[in-house]
Length: 383
Image (cartoon, rainbow, N blue to C red; front, top):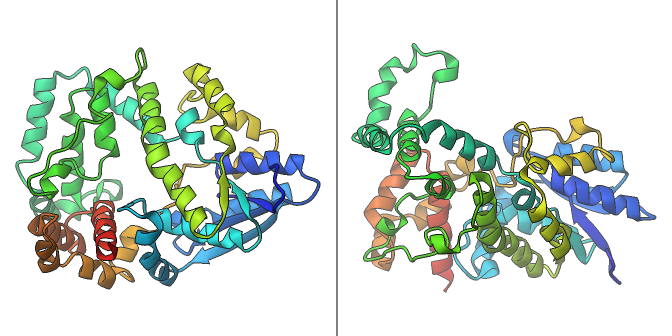
């Protein structure tokens, strides 16, 4: 908070940002300026929680509700702003909340790093739970089952299951059951825990197949000599996220969005002393009885009533699944045009075109994989 310019903070209403703001407000003689972004789509809207926390702490709070048009207006800036094919869909609200904050402050603090250091992502719970269930099953049997489930395409499964969908209980109905079965096949066929982690993190299971004459490089995900020794499965996931997802996605996203509007971002949870402390802590202080970020919750409890932050993690992405079929459909369709992609020569036009058609026809839920391609295409159009 030491600065000779106005300082504020991003506030989502989640554990990490709420904790940062609570400690800022405790140390400040005046209301801390806080900023949040909201969406009309309730499943993506954390602004209501941020507002509750802000009111409880007494901050000077500003919020902005985004419309699809706001995203459309921001899209042309993404390629030049990130200077590479950057495909985290939360890049748009991150840029817009940075723009909002810059109207009042020059420095903004964020809660980034809390998930990686203190076990906050749901995959840390789900991944270990899934692996503990499937690991006792012989690998050969699991792989045979996976091959059987993928004998039919997701679209063929959808068509075959459709006649019986109306007879199923509401809790068992799936809009795209073929996707669900293929997802199960991906999971049960993995060789070990680290392979399961890579599967959970991947939008494309065989990304090299999208790029003619390509193969994936030997990277940290596959080079076991670079892995942490003695780590259990949850620790392995946190270690990998700390070395890959955090610096290559989260920090790139926040830093470049801020710099695009001349806003300096500061990240207290990544102070090297706190990072060192976090990695010395036993796992029971991070994940306990199915509760993530246990120790951060204990500290936040001192400042904010638990009911204000004790809820499932939502993330910070745009409602991409709805918007790609609605207000962003024309923009996406132009970039995913088969003739255009074939003419450019970088990607497999037929495979991507089929994905787009399956998505529009509700045969395959692949919005985030398509967003990866769209961001490459948008970047390519700018270079």
